[in-house]
Image 1 (spheres, one colour):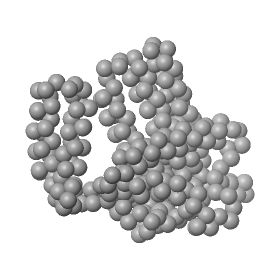
Image 2 (cartoon, rainbow over the protein chains, first blue to last red; image 1 turned 90 degrees about the vertical axis):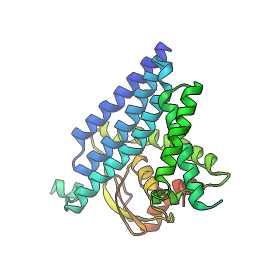
Image 3 (tube, each protein chain N blue to C red; image 1 turned 180 degrees about the horizontal axis):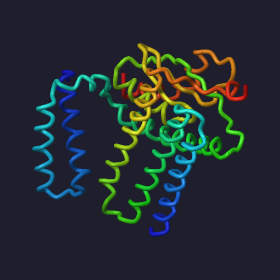
Image 4 (cartoon, rainbow over the protein chains, first blue to last red; image 1 turned 180 degrees about the vertical axis):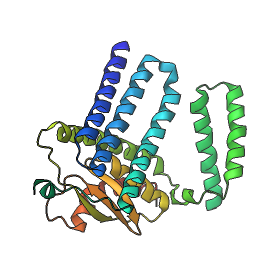
Length: 99
Length: 167
């Protein structure tokens, strides 16, 4: 149980790190939102799973937290993206970058 | 059963299960308190939740919901591996475009869940909803893709699952 918990905590931390790296490397706001939304959702779910293995009596509450994240994280990302789109932030294109 | 009554019953079950998960025990005291609270919530919210109209309450719905959750988790895993590959590769292989895709889901709730699912699937992010179309940011669009192909690639898989329990 302790080992499983550690493994999931490390996986979760790795995905959150990937999300942060995505924020740094991606060229514009939409791509950053993409990297952030997915990596952090899966990262937090893996972290919750790790916590669940360490404290088996917390399962019900962790399930509620997990469903909440799964429902709200994409909504938040889409809302941000929509705000940027409506205020006219253009897409990034590779061609423009090279010329 | 009358649709209004169905939605009230759904609110009751939802509130009760939520209560049980929060208290985390099956103690008779908690059960009684949960029933009281869930009844109050269902009675007070009855008729004030138009979003629930999108739910199709039928025999196959719970199974469809579980299948959908499973396919969503698989998609989320694939999305992350895909994103990890793009972020870690030095060339940054992305060709972002905004595409419109058509949805056959009619209810607000159905579109909400579809938009959410698209955001969590590999390489796509829902940006806006315009009538029957969803505006999607696609991080790696093959050149010359038209709306039908995009709809097919991005939305069809989820729509098939979602139609089992949403309108």
